[in-house]
Image 1: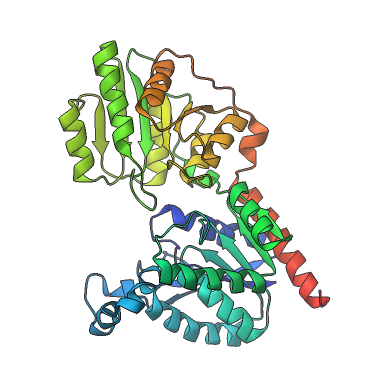
Image 2: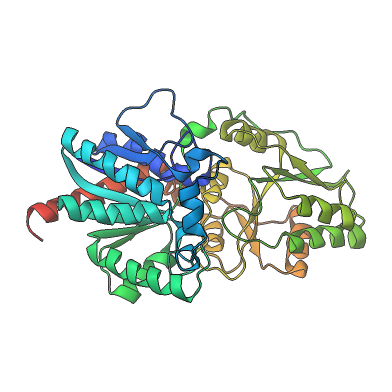
Length: 404
């Protein structure tokens, strides 16, 4: 069985958004489902790849300013919609799809959001070739949306979501809260939760048994603080400043290290607070090297969610679960908090300075709850998740063949 997997995020792009599509590309064939991938050409190609079709994207210009696109953006009415789309890629990928269907017997379209262009294209292709569509949401489109809408774009996107869900034979999300929204808002029955996950192959450099204990309690955060979701890092840094002032915590007792890309404003904030000795910023490293460092050099892992969001389950969290280190979760109210608590992998707190301060003190004293539930952690293995998704795909295709 062959499916068309439509995604704008795919290796060699380096982002959390590539994890699910690439895991399906790798692991679905083990379960009798062969993905043919339709993606962007903006990041080049993997060393060896089969059945991966790359279409031209607006990002292909890499800093150039094509007159046609800038002209569209200058029209205010269109500008309300276009920033969340890649119209160049949609048109180019639609042409590639014609060739794919000529060369492959495709039985289903699997479109994954984000991006908006991927699910728009999935809807168009499934209708054109009269094959079932599975839509995957790794972020909310209308419910707790990834992008901000003005009234015009909100109206357009709301109508589009309604059409998309009506045309989808199944919906897959990465969180129970998103699934609940689709089930209740649309009366949808064929909605499934398959969380983000970890890929065991990313942990091949991990050393055992881990670092030797010393007087410095080292905490690490892997990835940038402000990427797809706005996060108020000031709460965290203010809490560390309070820890230093009230408890006389020095660099000989505590260190928080960040690995990733960071804003100058974040670096300025820690300088203004006088905590440069406690907070360290490091350049991005590869996943394998990063996980090796986290496992060998640190005592705990920091997870920062998004205040006021119920749906946040970053792709980073399942990888943290697998690393076997206590998680300090600033994510109360996020779905991520329930995952940390249910898996016994740490403790969570609210987004205010006092709550973060108290949890950091508890972690420093060695009293943070850490009793991993292996059965829960195993649910996030990407290989196992692919097996579950393959079952959903087969059910949808079988239903289509039976005329259901």
